Image (cartoon, rainbow, N blue to C red):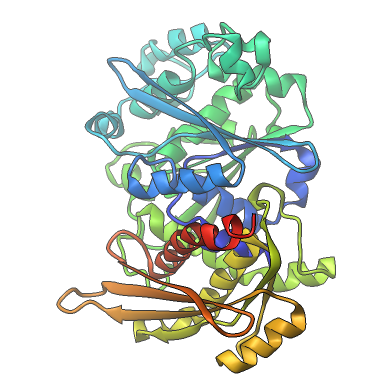
Amino acid sequence: MMRYALAALFLPFLLMMVLLCPARALAATGEQELELASSLVSMASYSDELSLLAREWLTETGWQFQSRATSTALAQGRYHLVTKELPDGRRAVLLAFPGTESVSDAKVDLRTTAVPFGGSTVEEFQTIAAQDRHATAYPLVHKGFDDYTMTALFHDPIESAESAEDGEPGGDKAVGQTMGEALAAELREHPDEILCLTGHSLGGAAAILTAARLSDMGVRPEQLRVITFGSPAVGDTAFARHYEKCMQLTRIVVAGDPVAAALQSLGTRYVQFGARTVWKQDRSSARFEHEMVVYLDKALRYYLADDGADASAAGNEELAWGVLDSQPKAISGGILVAAPSLDLDPLASDDAVIDTKALQGAWQERYAPCLVQSASEPSDITSLSTAARRSGAHYLVRQHVAVKRVRDEADVLRIVLETSIYDAQGNLVTAASKSTTTKRMTALEAVCYLQFSTLRDLDTVFVIQNA
């Protein structure tokens, strides 16, 4: 049940991700978990309200953030380092690049002229890119994407030992290097470490070019794991043929997303490479296929639906998923959570099972001990009180989800989450009602968002009251 918990706590979250950890840890990570973590970080890479909420959730669950923006005449490059100390002593490190969200970024996207790509040092990168593209043997890449990547990672040096020690790779040795150089040095020095890079749209392009630069700086292909969402092509055939052997690239594309093939349709010679995975948008989201919320929604669904085989293989529902875990808050006596009652619009009727998993899992992720009931068990107060006393729980929880179409707004849904908390004798302790619409997110993400907001408010009831 632990794996469901994150789903309801995060949603509109965080930024293009780099996961730096021992190879054995990545090998033990489920593909759905890695894709979800990547999509979550890619979502949170943007600077809107939903992304800030994502950062708030990640901070609550032990993640620390360092961000840097570098502006030049060519681009406004940005990256975010997000780190977390894991229970077994490993350290997860996320490197995040946002996608297009400003006029400067749009100019980067439109700067489609090809430039030569090669070299093994920052100075060589710059010198080769300045060569005549018609008289060079080097592969060619999208100039705007290269400008963005070079500005973000290969322009300004790390300034002080303190900033390096606070989360940037390399410690004291990294001072004076750019972040890209520090990452390459770290990976060369520790060949068992894997860097997983990911991003959406422009962020995905930056992820691919960063992996290519790191490869040219001596990082082995086995250490570079790249997952992109709706990313356009970044280079010509020569670039694709050379660098497809230098990284492990998975390109995830929602069916109908026009951006993934945009540059080819404009008549450029840029081509895609790597393993292509196509996701089909669920009917309840009904949004422009390129939006990051669509990719996150689908990653959520795959992750929540993939519990059966993994749980069976482990012989245990309480799986240790590493980077997606958080430490539950201890509650005196514990909580019993009934299966939620659902009143779903036909557009979201297929979400009943996955909504239940996300909601109940969030309780178990945030509080312990926490028991959940199945939909087949009675949820009236008398039965719940009896079950709570029998299990020793001090509190019992009932939740109701209503999803209704917004009048005069096609395909827009309003989601209402009502929560009631009782003591073990069936006396009402507190109640809350929260609502939102699907104008900025999908229906599933809205349910997760409301649950996160509700549980955050309830901490005073379960934690401070019992401190």
